[in-house]
Amino acid sequence: MSGAGAAPVLLGLGNLLFSAFRSTGKIEYLDESISVLREARHVRVGQDIAAKCLIQPLSSRILRLNRREDLDEIIQVFIALATDTNMRLTSRFQFSYHWATTAHLFVHPSVTAAYENAFSLMQDTLSYAPTLEIQHHRLVLMRESYEKLPSNYASYQIDSGQINMAIETLERGRALLWSEMRGFRTSADQLEAHDSNLAAEFVTINRDLEQVTMSMAPCGNLNTESSEVEGPWKMDPFGRLVMKQRQLLTERDKLISHIRALPGFGSFLKHPSFDALRSAALRGPVIIINHCKLRSDILILFYDSPPSLITTANDFYGRAVEMGDRLVKARKDHSLESKQYQRALRSVLEKLYELVGKPVIEEFRKVKIPEQSRVWWCPTSVFCYLPLHAMGPIPSDDGVKLYFSDLYIPSYTPTLSALIESRKPGAQTSEKPSILLVAQPESLRHAIQEIWVIQHLNTTVTSLISKKATPSSVVESLRHHQFTHFVCHGNLEPGKPFNASFKLYGGQPLTLLDIVHSRLPAAEFAFLSACHTAELTEESISDEALHLTAAMQYCGFRSVVGTMWAMADKDGQDLAKYFYESILSSDEPGVPYYERSARALRDAVKDLRRRKKGMPLERWVNYVHYGA
Image 1 (cartoon, rainbow, N blue to C red):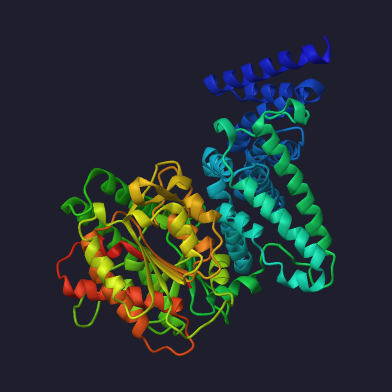
Image 2 (image 1 turned 180 degrees about the vertical axis):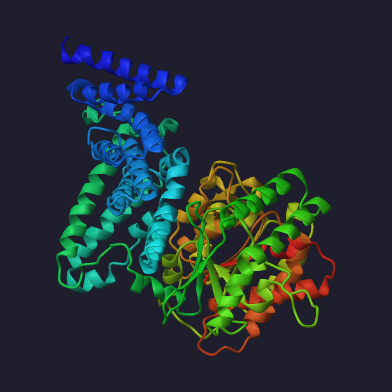
């Protein structure tokens, strides 16, 4: 029998024998199945299929007999599949992920190489998808692998005592789409001083790539790997888009290699080192939660001392998942002001304090971080949905109910790099910032009062209200103001994070993608008094932070106030009044106004709680601060 004819026979026999083992439990069938499938791997036509078929039988024998030679063999199978350049990138990534997971669980010496290979392929699967829409589609299709890979690798590094490297790993594996887009807007100022022509070429390629990446896939085509690139005359519009993106990527990679060969540019666009990342903690500690089934940990990053490691109990992972599920279900099944939702939220805040807040506060006291310090949360996984800033109540000597935000001034950041970026020097001025007010009062009963508060602030206010507020006029005006305040509806589309939007005049949407397209050199602070602005859509990847608040940060705003769910517009007037009174009147010489926004929000929420005694928890827990 020829090779081509032998392959299907051997594969069929091997799979049949494995089925017999699963039915009877007889080890002889398993041994024979493995032998036959090994033989099939030597037939050139069926090598890759035979390798895939070998995985399950070898896994079964490892679990039953724990033989080292079987472990070594299955690792070699995973390596062969992960490095097979004839296979689709997404398939290679999946096999690389399984190689890393297996090597980790069985303490195989290839574990670090496996994780590094998987990380590289994870990035390639996104880089070679031409648009953000397609990249997100891929993330969702393989969400388990994408979500677990960084946390699993970090857990292995923490277990090995490599805490600094674990922090680098978590940074590499989070907000992949934002990180890629931020790379397209890398400053070329330093390069300009060395070689102006090279800098101009780099900027041009980045702009072209950004334009392609933010375009929409023609005809809704979300599968790039099935595209055959045969020549421009045979390509449909989508094929031409793929071709253009890959040509630009090739040119950009060559250019980056050239730049890195220049003196002083060796680390250009490389993943930031721990020493670079620790600058995120310049103004206060950053709390990173690695939520991982293998082991979960809380890491606290400091600017001038080693990170703190808080180990967690074995049930930490499951309890966190349970809290997230309960809060999401309660929000689906009941109105936000219902007793059922209030009970669920109260229970989650109490359990969050026991699980996370208590050990973090104890560590702060141990290392002498004073109360009322600024702190940042950089969570992963389910913690991206949970209100860490409002954990409690926390026991107090006088019996007063205190929450985490009463003791510290909390903010969030999707990544350490985003926080570092938000603090980069800009045009500093001691003058009060100009404010752009964007409002749609027609469908919000209490919006007029909030508009009045903003318009009567002691600073310059430009108003785009009702018909003046169109997507184009808003984007144009954003370019000329340091602060902006939105009073309108915020919309989410389940499974379509890029369609999240502000509802402007006549129902016209200002979408997340519209905002991302913008370049806003004057932007400093945005107050998003709208629903869902820091809420993740269903089916979105939690670690990607694809919401309106993060989009505002990406396009230039250094600090942003958003909402975790729908907001009660009747609180907008009071919250805005207390907030701007605090931020515009505080005497903090040398501190930019946008850096005063976290304290101003915390104090405004405290005022709201004090003046509206008995207000539902969800109404004040809703507000969150992102950035500097």
